[in-house]
Length: 238
Length: 238
Image (cartoon, rainbow over all chains, first blue to last red):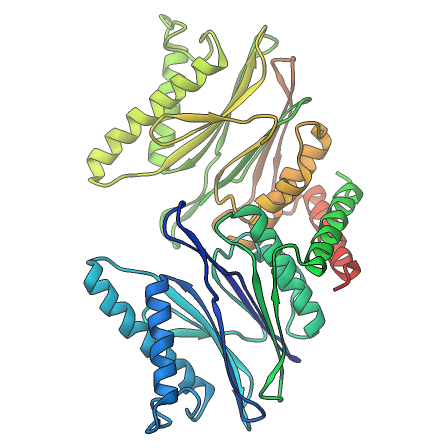
């Protein structure tokens, strides 16, 4: 399984993904699910992936190949596309093509989805959830977060704390606590984690960090939240 | 959809169920999903249901018919069965039989599950989750709660607050807050709610209450919890 969450706030965007991949319960590995593409000051794109690894890896490899192609154009490379909407379309097309090919080989449908976000100079920061068929939806001021994978355990805290006007610091805290709830409830979501923060208008990665198992900061936040929750629970009178 | 949760604590048991039933998104009704059978001081049984209404209603009707049968025996009536284990077996058999019949008619598998709990005089209070095939698992001191239906949104709070030694009052608070998180995140789980409390050893219903939409107590608890959560969130430092 997988859990990836992206926040699209007024100040910028926050991304968090786990790394656990499993083929059955007895074949568990660690694979990065967050990928960043950056031409600092010009363009930054973050992609997070969920679902069949053979689909998402191949789709990303094709996107990278198109970027590296010396004859790349605005219609082939996500680093040249004229808008973030067009970036989402290129990624949606790559995902849908690879998925259709894998489906045909397997004789059954596979699932794979992506969160795609970024900004190009002169454009605005946008975030999309790309479905397995290549169509997509966009995060809005009303619903400033998108999730893929095992999204349910970590949704209540986002519902209650995140608004479009939340700060990037609040956003970082919210995604970490949302992930913490998911890690506790679903063993197929696992450390290490990848965190990325973009600041609106900068068109570059503001901050990026891998959170390893046993990370002291993450442990402290998780413990503080558990304690605060138990105190809150004790305070509520029925 | 549905959300039902049962706690099996040292002091007794707490049950909470919603009432929303839907056939598609445009056909929504309200049906009770909690059923109690009581011979006060002698025996009490609580059943909560999730899944295909045609399966669970018919299974319950058959169980009731067996109870009312003047020739009922310990092998046919859950009100005469010699142990709570045997009660769970009778209910599992009824569920599996009806489901197999409905599956055959539909030409595809239906889903239906139940939480079954209770106590007979001289026995101990036990709680089971009965699967669609009629097999079951039991709540234990390690995992003192069972859920059916849309269980994910409401699980983190139970994981963090409920222990076998939690009080019935804490238990009631926990199931209400667990339901509150679920109601917020899944529109196909809806008010009114049914709450039942059993006290271990009494073999009777200790307390039973229907919580209607707009219930002032539920609203107050829900608001207090939202406020406490936001305060806790603000307190945690990253």
